[in-house]
Image (cartoon, rainbow, N blue to C red; front, side, top):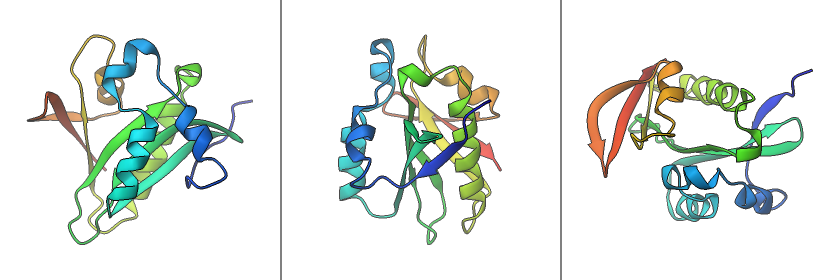
Length: 147
């Protein structure tokens, strides 16, 4: 039986577990460590931060810009721990994030960026329907998905 994938707030009860999640060494240059993302989220307004859970086990992390006054939803960070990749958790978690964005004012599309390199997440995102916008931010290709 497949585990239930949910998105939960990051709080005192799980923050250390989320900090300890990590991608494989070969993927380190594709996504910032969760501790950095959490520090940025703490210092930034209008951000939505969630832990990805498989049943009661934290398996990933997501950070989304969430400004209903200027609705341009951007998946700033997304990762699944190396031990849990390839199980469909990322795809399911992104579906939940897409549902959240649809529920927000002007939530008809979601943006993200990725490093275009061998072993990166480009194929994963494109398989879900993300399309490059032609914009490049600091060496990362921007992509968008119409919801």
